[in-house]
Image 1: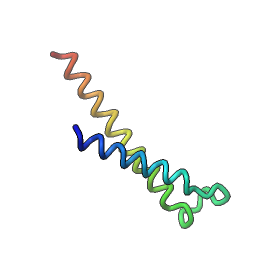
Image 2: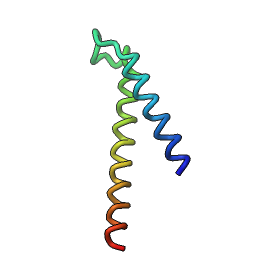
Image 3: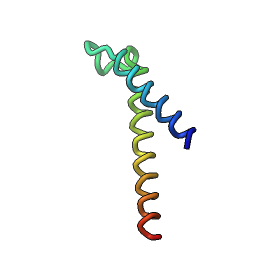
Amino acid sequence: MKLEKIITFIVLLLFVYGIYNLDAANLWSIRINWFSHLSFILFAAYLVYSVKKAAKQQDQAKSE
């Protein structure tokens, strides 16, 4: 449980740092905004993982 909180904090910190470093003038340039794009992909993947995990836990709680 504690490890999940640490991972969540790191993912959110990277996401916010990626937004902070985003160069809006060259929004779609991967060469310039590679870290911002990577942090968004990481955040989206972790969001999908956590929603699936929460749905599985909710299904298990309802079946008990």
